[in-house]
Length: 337
Length: 68
Image (cartoon, rainbow over all chains, first blue to last red; front, side, top):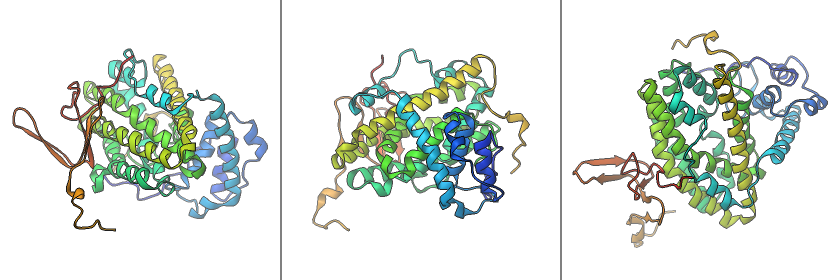
């Protein structure tokens, strides 16, 4: 599998904000005005894509966009205005647990009659559902564990050592063929999807963009390091049971060995990771900075909130026999390498 | 910073036990099962099932969790 020699292409704009940012990135015009940012729907695809474009400069950038734009003061001002709207909406809308212990306890209970996306895919998912799910999730899984690395210089002692150990495991324990992002690319290949980084940005729903923007927001701000740890804990704690259902979906539909392996690996890996994250990353962080407990709780609650929105949107579309994607898969060019 | 050579505690394998949850063992490990077969994991830490409900036994798959 050869890919990622080139930076991703800029996606199609989805409104005035994303058009403004994309145009500015190409060096062909001015940035969106602050009044436009104030008016836009906060979880809508235009604002979220504009924010995604700002964040992507910190990962792989875009073809034809100068890497210097990453620290362009005008663009950072726009990003800050977008983030302010996003963060205040999350603080208003996400359920807030009274304590971190309660938030963690809720995550650790498995519903007997679950009705989430992984339950749907296990019980009635067809290959086209799995392909859509993988295309949407590729925005996250092809940078799996990457934004969480930004927290490492902001931790020390037990929390740092544990976080680095889990990250090392996410990145394949030193073996390129075991990097989780690579395992996901192999899953995509089994499903006949293009494994190129950024390929499905046009196809991703607003709700999928929100899930990725959340981890970039938490990862890029030291002030939100507690929330980033809460995000990581939520992903690791909920991953094992969900991955088991997704592995069953892959097996039942005959998606392929790499597709099964991705989720089988996550059942086992995340059963370990969630223990390490709870005991040593959260435990170590709060030993040193106990006042961050509400931030960790907020990170958990915000992650649950955006994941539930994403799942609800997928299920609403699928139950209506509609595609969940913003651009159909079959209209996109096929991968050749 | 290397540990002092006289400090032998670094050579001991640490196992974390919990009343509810898996045994956490520093990896890599080989686990010999009842039938004599051996399974291995190279992970930095492994979670060994103690509730016997895991479908990936001997590895924990979080089946010990409460259901509601």
